[in-house]
Length: 416
Image (cartoon, rainbow, N blue to C red; front, side, top):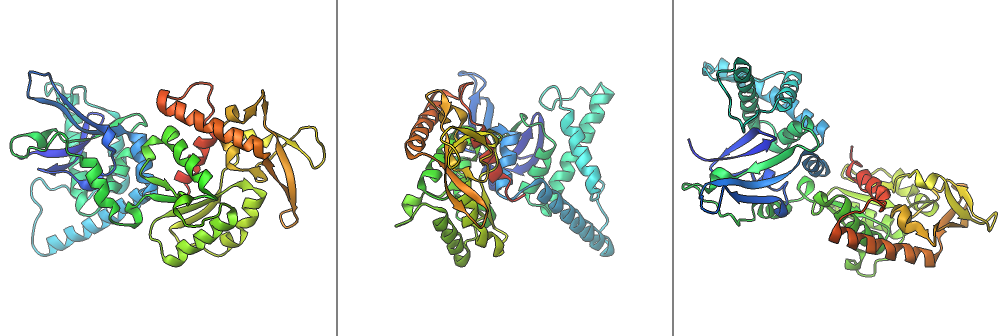
């Protein structure tokens, strides 16, 4: 019978590989998600070995690699169409289907069947009480769906198939790459083998969809703070989304003009990675990218700004009309990164640090706003402490991560 690795979603198993594992699937996991457990210290039987994450985490990892739900469905439709062409050719050549042959399914029916199978999980790790007609029917239905999905691997990228499976799985469902059988006598995979890390390293030797999503910002401070923040709010995307550290670029300046120049350089160089240029959501940021956004961008590039926040829709400002704080919508006018670091760190001496209105942009017809330099430094320092504390001890109820959460999610879905 051989030994297999396979994907588990809850108690269901899919995408079997004989005597090995699929490196494209292994590369979707991180090394700290590896689990190796024996039934007991005295027992040689392996209770659990593989990599395990949540469905929502794997969905996002696939998403930033370009394997969206829409792409998965399109790949499935194309694969089924090709399967039907091949089957017709086989019949024309006088090769009848075997008794266990399953004809290419209808796309909508397969998606619905997957949804039904994942919704009804077996009670005991795939063990079925065959005296119960209902459980027997459920087992037969699940086996048929698993078989169809495996057959389609000839025509559809495995990651698209997994994305299709994950689309119908609950967010908190455990999804694993089960490697238990590969530790038996005939295969004997080492328990310390960095399967996910090795697979990801091999993948990164290639470019395009397999490479991390590159994010370009206005400067090194933005890149460093966002990279650190993502480790708190979206740790499952570390290694899949990469913020460029401008310290590594000789003589790089930190402003929207430099960001625009970098984008043009990436386009001219034909960089194959998918990359995002994200600027401040303020007047200077919008003015500085007008020409770039009008010029027509390649498919692997997006140019955007930090998203609007409800916190910034009514925020204290000073000048040019009054020295007393006036509430105003600063979205699109004063949305520098500091404004996304959380209400808690923006609060200084019990009050939100006010935005100071400065230069007027006649083209856009609005003022540009920013925090005062001392306040900006205070906010940045407080945020670094908040990140360190969260990484060390976890997030606290009073800490505000909504701005960062919205910003990272905006980046994740920018290619939708």
